[in-house]
Image 1 (cartoon, rainbow, N blue to C red):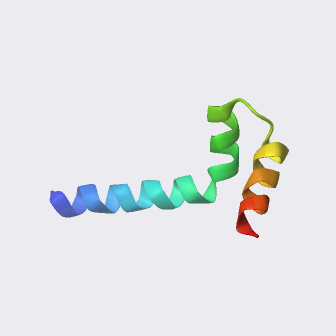
Image 2 (cartoon, one colour):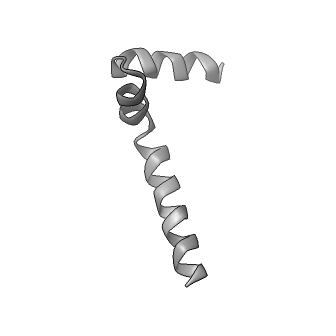
Length: 44
């Protein structure tokens, strides 16, 4: 049972990372392009 929960958490984390821009845009109430620029600026 614990292994199943661990797998679900890992899958959820990967999905959240893959869709981080639309998710962050929805949570923050900003446009996706603005969130993407913010992420790109932080990488440098």
